[in-house]
Amino acid sequence: MDASQGSRVVLITGASSGIGKACAELLVARGHVVYGTSRQPPAVEARGFHVLEMDVTRDDSVQGAVDAVLSREGHLDVVVNNAGYALAGALEDVSLDEARRLLDTNLLGVLRVCKAVLPSMRARRSGLIINISSLGGVVGLPFQSMYSASKFALEGLTESLRQEVAPFGIQATLVQPGDVRTRLTENRVQALQSGPGSVYRERFETALRVIEAEERAGVPPEDVARRVLEVMEDGAVRVRYSVGKVAQRGAVLAKMLLPSRTFEQLVMSLYGLSRS
Image 1 (cartoon, rainbow, N blue to C red):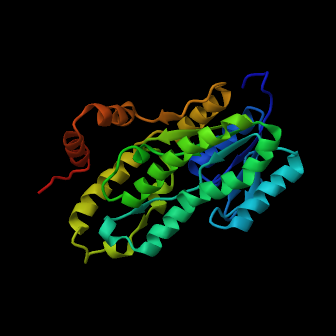
Image 2: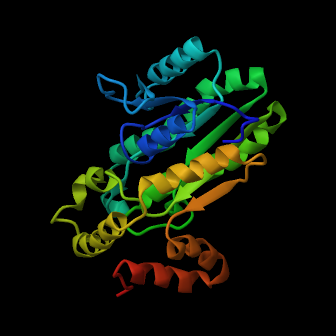
C-alpha cells in the first residue's frame, strides 16, 4: 500500500468464503481496517477482520451494517461488492421467482449497498466502490443466462455510477474474474425445471460438466484479492480490470475482433455444444 494513502476502512460483502474472504485477509495483512459481511457470520472474528451480519436482499440489513461501520470508524473509504451466487439452467427452465431471487442478490444487492454508503462518501468527497463482476458479464454464457444477465447489468450500472459520482471525488470500478476456485461451484443453484424432464437436459449436462471442470481448474481467489489491492493503489481508477487465465481474458478481445456468429460458435464449442 502506498504509505501516503495509509490505512483505509474497507467493507466487503460476501466475505465468509471465496473471493470475499481472500480480499478481507489480504487487506488486513496490508494494514487496512476491514469489515466483512455474511448472512450468517461466525461467532468469532475471522483472520483479523471484523465480521458483520448483512443480507444484501434486505434494505434494513444493509443499512444497519453500514451504520455500524460508520458508528465505529467514523467513515468508510472502500466498498467491495462481492456478494452473489450462480443460477444455472436454460432460460426457458428458469422461473420468474428464481430469476428475481438472483437479480435481487447479484444486482439489487449492489444497488442497496451503494445507496447506503454514498451519502457518507459524498460528505467526505472521497470513496472507492469496487464491484466484482465476471467475464460472464461481457460474454453471454450458455445455460447461465440469468447469471450473465446480472453481471451484464452490473457492468452498465457501474459505468453510469462512475459518471454520476465523479464530481464528488468518488470512484467506481469493475473487477472481472474468469473462472476462480471457490465454493460457487458447489453452491450453484440449478433451475428447478432443469431436471430430467427438460428438453434441454442433455445439452445442459454437457455444458455444466465443462463449467464445473473449468471452475475447479481456475485461479485461486487470492489472485482476485491481489487485483482488488492493485485497484485500491491505482490513483486513476480505470473502468474495469480483468483477472484470470490469459485465454479467458482474451475472450473479451476476441468478441470485439471476430464476427459475432464466429465468436458465438467458438463459445459453444468450448462448452461442448453445437447448433444441431
